[in-house]
Length: 204
Ligand SMILES: [Zn+2]
Ligand SMILES: [Zn+2]
Image (cartoon, rainbow, N blue to C red; front, side):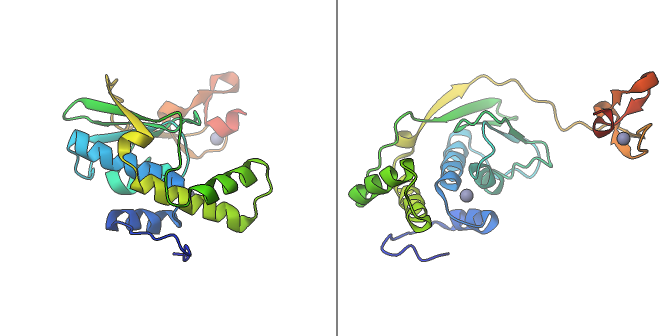
């Protein structure tokens, strides 16, 4: 990892694994990491080999990568559901315990670290679009460090919620599209001209 100059990081091993997968350390990744850790505690989770742990992310940001590594949820297994709402909120649940928690970032994030002055100066530069690449990077590192040092409840609110169990990943037979001939999951096909069953790309 790039040397963060005078910012001292003491990164836990599991976060290092997330960084290895994601490619860099950033506040988004830390959000996902913190949520996953809290969910593991609250729901007594083990990393999901199968589909018993399900994560619903209300954004498609860097945070999602930490959920994949920490919880073993993945879109391929169908237990990671992305909703593109642009919200820093996540619902994690365990099918076997039928318990679910929704974590949502608190309205006000207050930087509380030892670099407070520098942070607000960088913040200002970023909002007025005058920050250099280096300043933007440093702002991210300071924020990541600060997030890691805060109690979870300062960053996210946690709420137990009722869950609507999503179905297990659907297994459906495939058939050839009447237009392009490519094999397509039958449940994803649509009716084209003359009522022929075709794939979505062929229908537009
Ligand atoms: Zn990132
Ligand atoms: Zn087709």
